[in-house]
Amino acid sequence: MFDELSLHILDVAMNSLAAQARVVQITVLESRKRDWLIVRIRDDGRGMEESELRRVLERGRSGKEGRKRPIGLGLALLRQTSEMCGGHFHVRSAPGQGTTVTASMRWSHVDRPPLGDLKTTMLALCISNPTVDVRLTYRSDGQRMCFSSQELIRKSESAREPQDGARLPSSSDFLASKNSRARPESRPALGRILGGEAVE
Ligand SMILES: Nc1ncnc2c1ncn2[C@@H]1O[C@H](COP(=O)(O)OP(=O)(O)OP(=O)(O)O)[C@@H](O)[C@H]1O
Ligand SMILES: [Mg+2]
Image 1 (cartoon, rainbow, N blue to C red):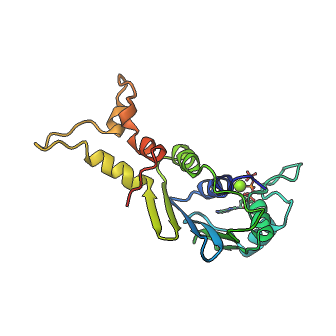
Image 2 (cartoon, protein in one colour):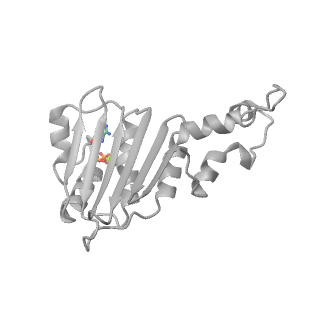
Image 3 (cartoon, helix red, strand yellow):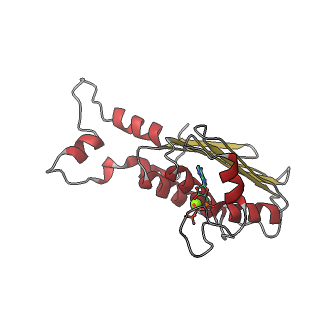
């Protein structure tokens, strides 16, 4: 078990990237009043056959062929955390239809790991595949925050369009130019995530 839920989220969302997802939707719902916390990671990747899903959920087995040691515990560890903290764990998956992993737990359970550094998890996911839309919805009693990496990139690109119609170089132009030197403002999305700014 990881000592932060954000590390579980990173591990499970990395599976989505490995499964060629174009959109990874991470949802965190927490309610102290109702005493639950739910984490859901949904993707539109390759999905799994029922038999494959059953096999990977067996605790201690790796889904990757050829491994000598029983690693590959991403899903098993999240299930363990969830069940140990009075919740439920569920995976829905079908070939070509993506995968949804849902883990609930009791918010007040003494063993429930803290959410941890979700910003760094988001940053790592965005960096590891910048063309994927990594989305986050976070809700707690009375609060809501949504983030979409691709929406942020679109907004930052259009903010570069000057009023008179002449177009400033975009970050992709910048990367395409051999003589360019990376400027910090060519990566505003990640800076804003680190700054904790929410994008609706
Ligand atoms: N979102 C997903 N889409 C398609 N297949 C998945 C998905 N998540 C998991 N799998 C399959 O289940 C297997 C087990 O996943 P799990 O995260 O438990 O371990 P792993 O990814 O094999 O190993 P590790 O996380 O240590 O690199 C994966 O190797 C993959 O074959
Ligand atoms: Mg994994």
